[in-house]
Length: 427
Image (cartoon, rainbow, N blue to C red):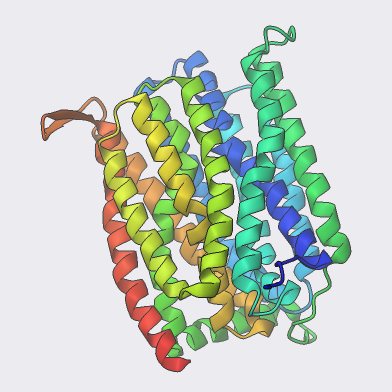
């Protein structure tokens, strides 16, 4: 009888951080855009610009992390990973708690950018810990467990927040106060889930620091980029990742804002995205198990193809029931493509340089997200008020803007096929 897969103590602590930070990103993809819309509306901001400004804020956050990530990642490989991880997580947690202090939509977006930079930066170091908390034979499953339990675990504080926000009148609270409480609950949940990893993790793979660690960091970063270019299998994979992960991150970050811009019911949007978490939990675990039977590259190709179809469906999205279908489809592949992409890189790079390469991966991931959200924001703003008739259906400007993701998914698929072929040839 096959032995049941069990996580070690360190692996459990690593997975727990995913449960903590996922609560913040779930709030980002659900309640936070709605709260931003309320602040913007009370200030008299043009309703057609909500999606654009929200997208621009996300773009600023991601481009900042794209610059910060590889530099800090290289520095972390000099035995500073735990310290820098703690700093980034603290910025994210404090930023999350401070969101309720913003008196207007502009300051709210500024605090959101700080919180998102802290969150995203912490993931550079969190992801780079993977080769140290487990071995290559368990990497796919452990990575999938992180996303799976992150999805289901983040639901716990989110349901509490959702009840407080939707039933704030019953509790004698204003909507603003309910949101402040929600931000605090999420920040505390994130903090408590971070502590075990900080206690249990010890950096085991690192490069010895010289007399000038910061100067050495920039030199090593240059060496890493040159090394990646020479190792075509790694370089092509990172470029492919740049394209296909764009759609994944953009859909996660802008799902609620997109649905709200189309005029869909707010409560329905929140419940649909809650359903995504419940669907993503078992599907992420299934992908982890499938990776033991099928080639990881094949599973990533299937996921990219599925996301391309999901994006086409999203272009023609008009009704509430369609958003529910979209939520289920995203949940089926969201965890799988993220987890397997993370572990795929871990298998093709040197463990002692994981911080550097996960920093480069973050450039590609966050850089792509910047491109995706910025393109959607620009197209949405330029086509404000415009409608197009396609196949007898009237598409709004938001529908038109989302179509740009199809091209990026297609490019990612083609490049990943080439990278995967090279990686197989090296085995």
